[in-house]
Structures are given as structure tokens and as C-alpha cells.
Amino acid sequence: MAHRAAVQAFQSEHYAALQRSVRRNRYFHKYLLRLVGRHIPPNARVLDVGCGNGDMLAGLGAAHAVGIDLNPAAISDARQRHPEIEFHTMAAEDLAAAAWAPFDVIVLSGVFSQLYDLHTALENLRSVCHDRTRVVICSFSRLWQPCIRAGEAAGLKQRVPDESWIPSEETINLLTQCDFKVVRQAQGILLPLYAPVVSNLINRWVAPLPGIRQLCLCTLTVARMLPRRNVSAAPPSVSVVVPVRNEAGNVPQLLARIPKMSRQQEVIFVEGHSTDDTWPAVQKAVADYAGPFSLRAVQQTGHGKADAVRAGFALATGDILAILDGDISVPPEELARFVDLIARGQCEFANGSRLVYPMEKHAMQFLNMVANKIFGKIFTFLLGQNLRDTLCGTKVMRRSDYDRIAANRAYFGDFDPFGDFDLLFGAARLDLHMADVPVHYKQRTYGSTNISRFRHGLLLVRMCGFAARKLTFVR
Image (cartoon, rainbow, N blue to C red; front, top):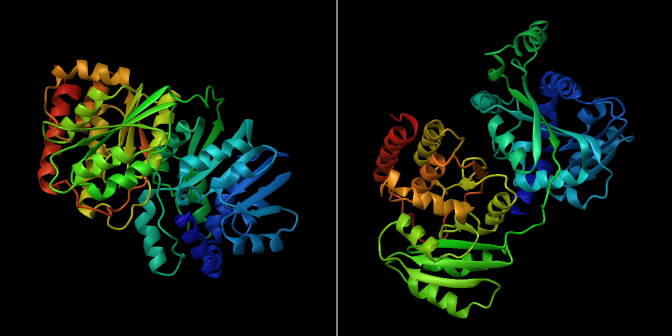
């Protein structure tokens, strides 16, 4: 809600400047309208999410059109400009509360990367879809980020709050997790500035060509909603293992924020040789707890997070096993999404990714972020599945799959002090379907990180070599 309020305040305050930016770049917006308009069939009911002043929606020629936007100033302007169209001040995350008949086409043009919670927004889109609805998402290529920033600096474009810059493959991943099937993806607009004859020539005839279209500014993703089975069926039982080392100040808040995800749920704290009061804090939390979960606490005899996770899983009784770091840098509330994906069979190994949404300012140092992105690409190649963030501590899987990983552990040996790669490599060897789940990454409010940038960076290099020998370049 704080993020939504900040975006709403920014858009209202800078609405006039945003409109001037649209007018300065009218060629781009007119050509984008042409690209989106190709996907609007005759007599269609169209919903435009993030409609702005309503000009695009009006240009689509829909039989019945509805536009929503977070910005009240934009909606007021849209109603004056296009009184024949229905407009509402509303966030995409609130669509489920709207009692509207299903739409034939839902357009999200340029707004997808600005949404705070994409899973919730996509889930709520389902409430206004029928089985033939097409969702059309227009997103912008990260390759163009330096050019866009330069345009903002030169005053050619109004800067907006931090965006996610979601790549095409991540858009597909998010849609799949919410039971949408991508029908097609198409790139467009290689020259967004107007030059007589030249712009249309390049954007029409050159931009779609193989090898060149990947350089385009815009990607249009068209998807349809799939039927969902057993969507309300909660897993029988869930065990949440929380490794804690020097996290005394986080324990009470963490326990209060873990969501209820199943009929039977346990939380297992594994304390690891802390130098503060973490163990007394855990003991007090367990003794005072009167909530719906069963609580257990244990002190690990070994060292490192890998040993802590194994100790917790050895005690766990749940059908689904979850790991949640005790530093609360990943909001505990987001764990429910992981469990839901596993329970619905969307994946067999849910891996948190901190590299999709914008992070809080001091959540991750710049060099760490660059290294994580580089290693994410390397491990995507080595493991054969798309994983953007191998070191996010939030991971969820079924107990039966963990037991198989543990049974095959001798193939890799005891090589991983983190615990992340023991699970990732084991899942890859068993050909489990792994999926990145975007999470919001927050700055620590208590304690300091247990990660050593350079020492653990060297370990990551070793992990790459290990994965190459054991999983990729195998005899």
C-alpha cells in the first residue's frame, strides 16, 4: 500500500509533465497504438489497465471500453476527453472487487513493469476474463534503458518511479504461474523518434526481421487464461524451516508475519551458534506462542546454513517444505505464493528471485547485484533451466522430492556451505521443474548480513565449475 500511495502521489503531482512527455513523443505513442490495435477484434469489449488520459483506449475502436488508472488526475482528464468511455480510478490489484462482465481483450500498455505485485494483479485479471479473452501486455526492453535515461536527462521524456524492466522470458514465467498461456510474443519499434519516411520504413519493414527484432524497444505478449483445477485445495501440511543466526530482533516479527498456508502447519527455528540473544529469543517466542502453528526450535550441532536446513528438514513432518531466512529481507507474507505454486503443480521446485522487482535502496550492494545477475545467467546455462537468482534463501518443494534429492546426495558429495546449491543441483539432476518466483527484497532492519562478498564470491565460482563437471560437461 505504501508503494501504491507513493506512485499515485508522484503521478498526480507530475501529471502535467507526463502529458507533455506524451505529446513530445506522439509518434511513438501513435505507432504503439497501431501495434496494440492489431490485437483488437471487431465489436470487442476492451479493458485498458493503466489507461492514462484514455487516448489509446479511444483509438482502439472497441464496442465497449473501460479504462482504469491509479491516478485520479488522469481519470478526470480522460473523462473530459472521452465522455463516451467508462473510466475508474482503480489499481490493477483491486480488479477482483469490480463486478464487471468479462472482457474480450485486456490491455496493459507500459504499466506491467510499474505494478508492485504482479502475481496479485494477474490473479485479479482472471476475474474479468472468459475462456476466449486475450491479455495484451506491452513491455519495454532493458537494452533501451540507457537511451531512455539519456532522454529523461535531456528533457525528452518525464522520468517515472523505479520500474522492474521485466524481460520477455520473465513475463512468460509470471503469466504461466498465474495459469495464463502465452499465445505469441512480437517485438516492435526500432526507431521511436520521428523522422519523415525513415521511421515508418524502419519500424514497418526492418524491425520485424529475425536478428533485428530483439533490438526493438517494445515487446507485445499476448496470452489467454487457462482453466484452473483444485485452485482452492490447500496442501495437507506445510513445514517452514527458519535458519536464524544473530537474528534476535527479528524473531517476534517474523513469527507474527508467517502466513497460514495449510490445515496443518509447523514452524521450525534452527539456531546456529549466534553471538547475540537469538536462542533465548527463539525459546521465548515458542513458549509464548498461542497461534495456529505448531512450533519447534533446535540448535544445530554443525555449522553453516546448509547444515541448519538439513537439521530442520530432518525434523519436519509437512508434505511441503519451505525455507525462509530469518533476516526478513524477503517478506514472510510472500511465502504463500511459493506454496500455492507447488500445491497447484505449477512447478516442483519454487526458487525465490530478488532480481525482478526494484529493491529497497540498501537491500543489496551494487557489486553483489551485478555478480548475482552474472551468476544467474551462468547457472541458467549450467542447470538447463531459467534461474535468475540462485542465492535467494526462499525455496519450497515437496517433501517427497527433497527425500529424493537427499538420497542422491552422494553423487555431489558435501560440497555446499550455503545449502542453496545442494538443493538446486539435486533438483536439476532429478529433472525437477524449477521456477523462479519474484519476491520483494527489503533492507535489513536488525543485525548485519552473514554474507562475505569476496569469500562467498569465490565459492560461487567454485560452484560454477562443480556444476559444469557434474551436470553439464558430463563424461
